[in-house]
Image (cartoon, rainbow, N blue to C red; front, side, top):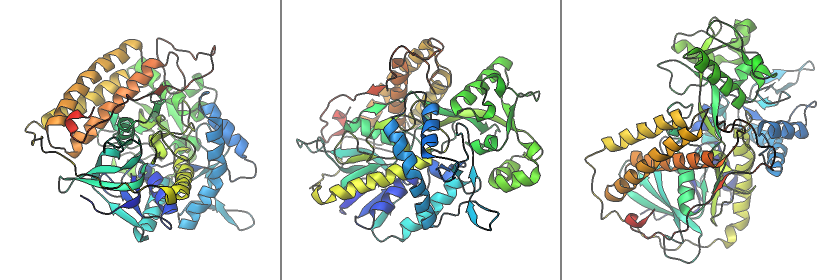
Length: 544
């Protein structure tokens, strides 16, 4: 058992977790838990940038309006305004931390932050560090975290379950820490804490093709759901329109900024096509672009389409997209000479655990920040570069809320060790790998960019069978990281399917052949799923 009591236990080491930790650490003892390497996560691979109003010709009102339009009627206006208003201060904080953002020299000799434009934005408002913003931001904050004496880091630890009052047979519902599997020792440890923050990112690995890293298995949503948190809008999965199509390129996306700077989408014969789907062309929101590409690929039987920015010239490309250019060269593609083959891939989970503006969930003492949370910011479709912004603004807000409540938070008390006395080592690990492949394939085939009632029901039938099989496996065999991820992945797949079945219209990222239009006859509603009420005991055999 881990004997150190932390004020705050943060699960996840991406931008949301790092931001929350740094805003807490001067006044609280913090632990950050990473499933694998410390800084591994989707934030690290974000290319585009962070949306913020920094130009005199721009305004918070325009940022809000653009976000609301992209969100297709389901954004929470208060959450959108909260994020847009907090964006400039968030950028200032990152600059203070030392993030090397790209700058440009003005006529008067000043060097201001360079702003680019991406899909859905009416103005240039995306702050970036060349074409590897996530890497620059995360690496900078990691250095700050490693140097802070009040932050403990636990790499290669996987969350098994959140510890709530129900786990300890107490009357209140409060979250009191988490049980974590140490990958190196294979032992499960109890980590008590006064507050827990889920900053675990999304669940892109539920799909066969994704831009997400391997750690994105929906753990936070699954943990929160089992602890008693509601989820909202899980049907809205954003598919990035332009993932590089190459047999050796794993999860490598071509930034939205390539289209923002003039890149054109072409059919295999070189014909442009986006103007036939939306007057904004390549700068339409991602859901429209992804569906357009999907439509053309299916119509032509094509394996991919092409993204072409050669007309901007080699100097421009090398200046704006040095990392993308270098990475493509590894696959024999020179974007200064060749159009890049691209396909859509699962990219971002718009729904998640329901929270308020301070990240508080339905469970006392449990917060959720970043992609794992449903704040209402994104609605039915996330606008480009609002995701890193969400991590920053809501991470700070959650930290301040926790600090305000820290003095009255109860000590978790004695937390019993994890009981695995009734389990044995598995001699059938192939079951885990087979089920992992199966869920990702049927989610891609049946719950992808274009859906139908029949496809969703096929997916539901399969996920129900898998859930039963995995539950039995979980009860009888000792835990592994792969088993925990599979268990969470299947639960998240089920929540996505159930949410998609509940929405009887096409809106934003959810498009169904059986209801292909928006239902304008009623006020748009979020899809909210409520977990069953239960009081699990300490033995895993009785946990749902």
